[in-house]
Every structure is written in C-alpha cells, then in structure tokens.
Length: 471
Ligand code: FCB
Image 1 (cartoon, rainbow, N blue to C red):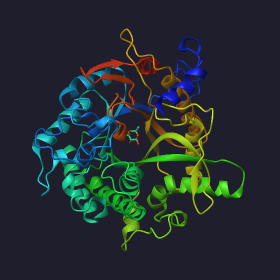
Image 2 (spheres, rainbow, N blue to C red; image 1 turned 90 degrees about the vertical axis):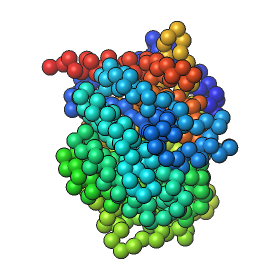
Image 3 (cartoon, protein in one colour; image 1 turned 60 degrees about the vertical axis):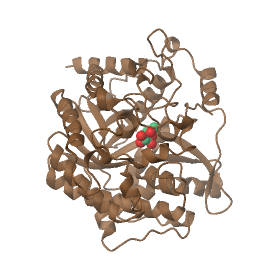
C-alpha cells in the first residue's frame, strides 16, 4: 500500500522548485497564521519516542506487551529504544527551540511515574520535571497529555478500560501529576484519542491490548470518558492556572453517491468517529444513532456518569488526518469505497484538507458550547530519505500548507482555533506500523539516532522567524 500510494503522488506532483505550494508558510497577509498568538508547535508521545522501557523503575505498559506479541506490529518493531528520547531529551529540546517552535505537546508514561499500589516513582517523575522545567526556561508553551495509550500492564491485567476501577486509578494518577508538575504545564489534556483506545484497542484489536468485540469498545469508551471527567476537577483544583481539555481524533466521511442510503452511511461514519466522543463531552449523552449502527452495544452507565463526563472544558484538542468515502453496506452500516486517483500518503490515507475545515465549521453549528480549539495533531507519513544531508519532503510541505489554509478558513468562518501542532516533531514508533512510517518534520536514523531536520521543518522555522520579526 505504501508504494502504491507514493507512486500515485509522485506521478502528479511537480518538483519543489516549480511547485507554487512549496513554501507553505507565506500565507496571505490576512491569514490568522500571522497572528503572534496563534500557537505553532509540534507534538510527540511517550511510547513513540522515549525508549528506556526498563529504566529507572518504569513498569511494562500494554504497548510493551502488544508489540512483543508476534504479528501485531509491522516487522516486529517495539518501542524499547524508539528515538532514545529518554536519554537525548536535552538535545531534542534544543532542536525544537532552534526551529523556533513555540509549543510542545508531549505525553507522560503512566507506568513510569507510579506503581501498582499508586506509590510515586521519583526517578520517573524527575525525568518529566527536568524536561518541563527546561521547556519553561526556553519559553516553550507546554501541552501535556496524561494518557497517550501506554496503560500500565498491571491495570490491563485487572480488565484495563473494561474495568470501571481504571477510571478511578486514572484520577489518582492525574492527581499525582498535577500536584507534582503544577506551574510547568500550560495545558493538560486528559486523554489522547479515546476513539483509538476504545475502538482499535478493544473493538477491532489492531492496537493494544488487542481485544475485538463491539460491546467492549463502547464500554471501554465509557470508562475512558469517565476517567477524563473524573480527572478534570482534580486538575482544576491542583493546577488552577493551566487550561484543561481532551484530545479527540476526528474523521470526515463523505457519501459515495447522492442516494439517501449513502448519505445516511456518511452520517453514521461521522457519528461513529466524532459524535461518539464529542456528544457525551459536549451534550452529556451518547448519540443514539451509534446503537443503530452497533445494535446491542449500549454501555453500562451509572447515575451521574454523563454529568461527570460533560465537565466544562477550557479547550478541545483536535487531531485530523484524512477523509473516508463511504457507501451503505446494504444494512444499517457503512462500508468504505476508496476513491481512485486521489492523492494519498505513505499510510494510504487520502489527503483532504477541506475535511478539516468542514468538520470544524460543522462542530461550531452542532455544539453551542464548543470550547476553543487547538489542532493538536496534523501531518503525514512519507518514505523520507536523507540525501546529501538533506530530506526534501515535498509532499509534506504541500500537505502542511493546505491544512493550515483550511484552518485559516475555519477561523474566518468563526471557529475559535488558537493553535496548531505538527505531528510529529520527529519520526517515531508509529504504533502497529512500527518505524516504517515516517511522520516527523525531523528525520531519525534509527541505527545511529542521528536527527536530520527535513525541508518542511526548515520552512516552518523560516516562517516563524519572519513572523517573530514583524512589528
Ligand atoms: C494519531 C496518534 C499519534 C500518531 C498519529 C499518526 O492517531 O495520536 O500518536 O500515531 O496518529
């Protein structure tokens, strides 16, 4: 799939030099990107970059177990070493700062900072304290995600997100972290992409812990959202000055035809990808259409849970990657109908910036209480190679320009978007796809751990410098 996808693009893409899209960061004068308070940063996640999985008292996570299981991750890759960021964090922060990036979104590895009895692990905590203190010293705005999928294995052994108790353990973890790190975090996100944790982790088994049952997915989602809702007041009490929110991945679904059945299929696709998460958070109820799609999967919800989940948010993090074209499956559901001749990335994902704009403007109409938005992830994978010390990631440059333009259009249409984080600062462990898929704006040579700034990052840096110099 990777080769086919890049072949499609190569055939259609002009060279950088004669590509009018080549410089993504010379937006029109009226673009919101020029505003100095529009935050531009980059994102990473603990398991994808840290490595050092057995060091300083870190306990195993579900991703250690899953990636060590044959057949689960491409080429048998694991996060055991990853980008060795645990040892190279200082140089990595210097690199981020030298690119002029103003924000850094990172995540904390829960199994690094507390044990099964809830006892804090000082060495693990100190790692994050050093990192965040350095970022503050350098003037970088810090977005910290508490859960980017690396659940401690000992919690999975007791049922993981199928066990309601995990939500309470998460609130304890949020309590510890916000007491320890208060003052160094500008924005806390409770969860990264609960859709992936619940659906890929418990619904189809593509991610850790690898369970596959529709009812598991909805119950895991409920406990994830409950964990979020329990953590928000804890974070507010311990660290009042910071912003509190959550990060959701969103998917654009478009209909393969004008038929009512296909239109309904596209609607159900978006219910499954977006409303399943956003409705409970912003309306305090699950969308009933979800259970038309997946009959008999209603989760067990206790009195008061939905109020807990709908705790007011200071911001909503949005991760956007692609759109999916769907048709009716002839029954109550949808099936994907891949479009021919469209631009795709190394993941095979369709490049469709309008989807981001259309979803954002749609959310503004649907949710009267939509909080301020940060695009907490956007980017693409390409098969990048270092040639003569350079990485010319043409497709990414064009991708970023078009998605930033889509964000600007959403802002002009009235959506309150306050910032944008590139996924990712550097190439890393791309979950079930291992190291083959490169999402970074910095290239990582995994045999030497050498970092090479890609052309896309150079252009971001150039833009930020230009913006900073403006009066
Ligand atoms: C998102 C994840 C992130 C990364 C990107 C490509 O779903 O949050 O960790 O893997 O996809």
